[in-house]
Length: 230
Ligand code: HEM
Ligand code: HEM
Image 1 (cartoon, rainbow, N blue to C red):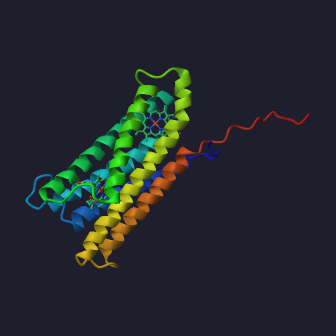
Image 2: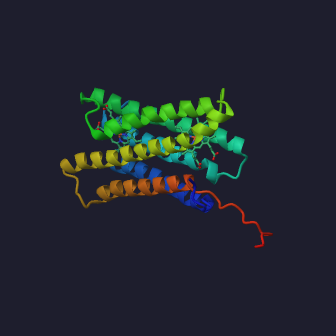
Image 3: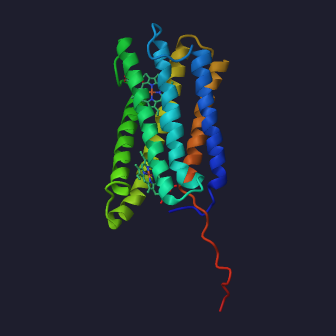
């Protein structure tokens, strides 16, 4: 099931929104929240590693991996390697970002996995890992037989998009949750920081909508020019 629209021009909008969302999360964590650090007496700097790694990794690099078949004018086999490598980078950054938040919770004596954000987030990461391993084994090495590959492909696409939607849901819930914590401590609800965090969610959702749109569209088949009615 593919819509007959050429997605290539739209992929430029995807790149732009992805870069904008990364810039926004850096301005938030560095300018407003004091920066990023793995080892610091100020543990909030360790927290800041979490949104930055999740946004760059699973959201932006993961989204770019999905649209790589539509955004790159290269051979199919080359795009396959780029697709799997970008997904691997996204997954690794996602795992490091998740490790950072568990470490932060341990150091601050905060319980783990108590929120819907954390449940959907951990489920999304596990399923992302499963999707990567299945994709690698069936489509790359050692590779399934042609019948299994063609049966698996629609499942790979649908399951991949579902997992990606879960990742995006986790991220926007994360922004909302952290902003609510800050507002409960007195942050102005209509202040610049609140707008920045909410608009980071807006840009993230727009990015993800275009990623999914690019994945389900492909250039229309060429019309037969020499066709003439009998
Ligand atoms: C791909 C996106 C994301 C995933 C998969 C994810 C995953 C997780 C997980 C598994 C936890 C639980 C850690 C623990 O219980 O020790 C967590 C906590 C947290 N995350 Fe995220 N996260 C994502 C993005 C974000 C973003 C963008 C923010 C924005 C600030 C954020 C804010 C938080 C906060 C405030 C917590 C601590 C409170 C809680 O456990 O709900 N997350 N995240
Ligand atoms: C978590 C990791 C992965 C996710 C979320 C994912 C997701 C997707 C999605 C959404 C598509 C459809 C793209 C489109 O039609 O434009 C796709 C296509 C594809 N993926 Fe993956 N993928 C992942 C990992 C892998 C891996 C490791 C391989 C191994 C080679 C792989 C091989 C392929 C192939 C061959 C296609 C078909 C492209 C085509 O014929 O148009 N994927 N993937």
